[in-house]
Image (tube, rainbow, N blue to C red; front, side):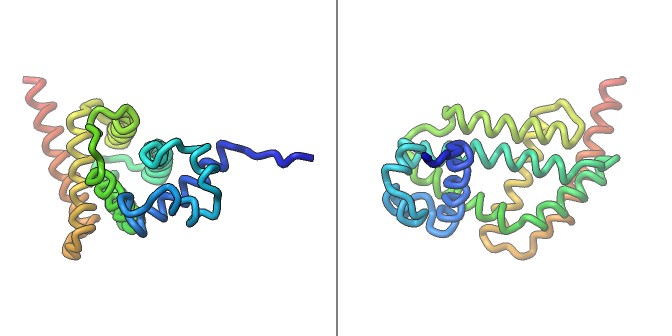
Length: 194
């Protein structure tokens, strides 16, 4: 009887292994042949699922952005105030610091090795939109510009940690941002009433 393969599940398993490989060696440092060897699959099998290293990375971004949003929203659920939400975000970043630093490293390394204009890549646009919508949902706002600001702030904190700045305290920074956002939103609601 032929072996039945769940291709979608197998593809996800390959992507998971690729994340670890890219985090260890860097996107630019490995070839598809090396990826296949590290995953103990044939090069043909790898190309069956991913026509190129860039396509593999794009699918990794798609998968990770979906997982990140689901996991974050589930874990950060239940905060009643913006201050509580930002405190929860800080704790979430501490809990997942290694993962976020690895993912940021992989992403920066990928960007450094691209000749194409990645700003116009639909996969990256979708992932960015997904994160932006999750930030709006998490913060309980409709302002996409403010959501992008918060995401940029968080990405900046993670980059600082990646660069080795041990003085960055995720909880402290997120609590401070929560105070700033609360004041900003209160000021905006007062100005819109006047």
